[in-house]
Amino acid sequence: GGTHGCVLESGKDVVFNPEDDDFEHQLDLRMACVDPSTKDELHTVEVEGQDLEGQKVKAVLVSLKPSTLPSVCLGGFNITPPAVFRLKAGSGPIHISGQHLVMMEADQSFDEEDDEDEEEEEETLKTSKKRPASSPAVKSQVCCTHILGSFLVVN
Image (cartoon, rainbow, N blue to C red; front, side, top):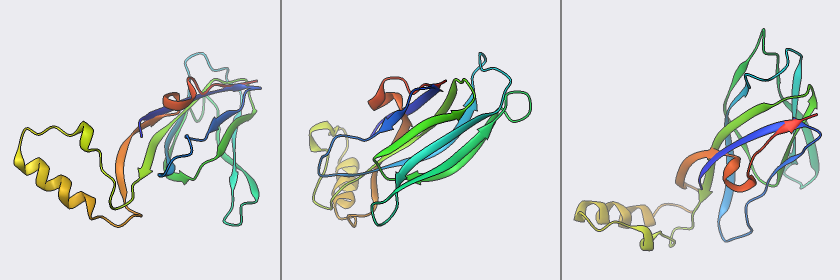
């Protein structure tokens, strides 16, 4: 997990598809907003993902216009990768941010990174290893930049 932020620019797709590892990844989208340099025109962001059957699905995520609707709270819109973001209308840039959630198996932990300052912390870590596999064990701020460099959708 890590900070994720994308900038969408016209003509550039931004792909969220973390490395294939033993973890389950989710992108929890929080905010979409314009940039100070964004032209005052309607910007429409499309997201392409998969449904439960693995079929491709495209949906409009948000429409923004600097003078009337410069930002929208996406309120924790969850996407399971792979997902593609693109600017369907407008020249951008549009910024999208959220959290990259990594679901851990019950027996996995980050022992190598643990600080052993206090025994209380160690107790907490032991407890967290017993969580069900589906609970988010790592929640960190996500900007699509973490994996993708810069997420710019610009026409």
